[in-house]
Image (tube, rainbow over all chains, first blue to last red; front, side, top):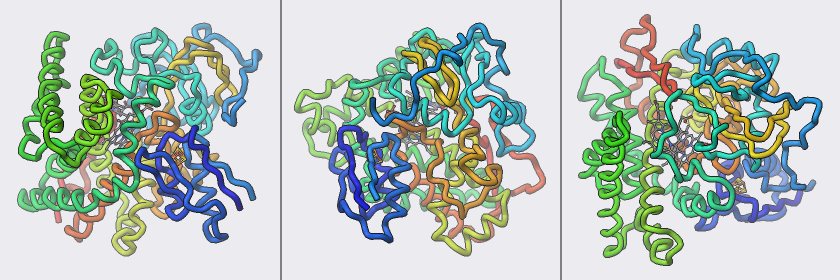
Length: 63
Length: 415
Ligand code: HEM
Ligand code: HEM
Ligand code: SF4
């Protein structure tokens, strides 16, 4: 799985950090940041949750 | 075309709102169960998720009750939050409040994004987590007050109304010693009945914040005001006027909402003993329980209003430019297409997608802080009072069901 985060769309809502804290972080302005681009299989579920929860649809997931 | 969820309008479904007979008057108040939304909405939602309604001021609006429809409307940039627009739904029947002009909640597009980003940095998940010890201390002090008042004490008065405003004071940078001064100013602002009173009350609030800002211009302080003064006032990205407006509206937006979720949430747990028991046995379920309570409880009962700036299709219905919509989270949160057994409170379910914080660019920027506050308050309460129960378990709950937010007005508890 590959994840991408569109920082231009991101509004810094942090839903991704709550859903998958080991994959997403926020910078000092709250804008989302990827900690890893290829999450481990046991993280895939959380990452899908994060993509679903993001109110800006800023997270893309490719299997 | 971006990856946006709303499709282009289909001329077939484009019927101007004012030509349709309203399905009901909004808001509705009649309900048979204290934790359920009025039945009239539930019935309507099943057959017409985007329905024409008549607002209490007589004007027509669309009422959106499906999960899909609420998400589509609140995340679509063709819907505006400009409450001075003539098509903007008026939910209270009162004139639009001058107080809210040019606040974050009423801005759109780039202007909204510009100011909003200054606030999100103050409210990240990391920053919320760093506040856990302070929130715990504030909560424990409130629980001391509850214990001191003795069995039969009102949890709304001693806990629900105390914790969120103290946490907001800490966040923004209002000294605890001036807490009562601030709540006095806020009460005057909200209770003002004439516009002259309101202007005077607002002036007092602005002068108070002006002093706090001046203090930060001379001293480094580690709070929202201090950070904003250093990062944005000093660089000219923020005027003094706008900084003060952002600060006091953040205080205002964060208090009643969180307070009412504390009162309603505790009432719901005490009325669902099996769920309460489960949380006592398995405290690690609490973060999930917070989201489930937010899903289940119909607090944002007057919904979230917007006005269409262009023709937009929402869940199969075309909304024409200039028409208003009201997105109703309490109904969307019980959409059977998304949540199984939607009318059941089940703290084990994954309810994180609920829409009680809104959705899209205006979604509550403080959701992580609010979630943490609720988690700490519910958890500490159950730990401290292992036998907590309603003082009168047979009496009807005392609710305030006519205001913008549905809530319990009083909750007498014993232990
Ligand atoms: C950026 C500005 C603000 C935002 C985003 C905001 C947001 C909210 C939200 C989401 C609610 C829940 C009910 C609803 O409207 O659906 C609410 C209720 C409320 N707000 Fe605000 N608010 C803001 C500013 C203010 C200000 C400036 C005041 C006071 C003058 C205020 C006073 C209240 C009160 C009193 C309620 C609860 C009403 C009740 O329970 O009867 N808010 N606000
Ligand atoms: C359980 C508690 C809370 C609930 C249910 C809640 C709900 C909401 C909702 C529904 C909105 C979006 C309104 C819209 O789309 O027009 C909102 C916006 C907002 N909330 Fe909250 N909120 C809560 C707690 C807080 C707290 C603790 C703070 C601050 C410390 C806060 C600050 C704000 C601000 C500043 C906005 C305006 C954001 C914008 O318009 O961009 N809220 N809230
Ligand atoms: S949930 Fe979406 S908008 Fe929020 S920080 Fe993550 S990527 Fe950004």
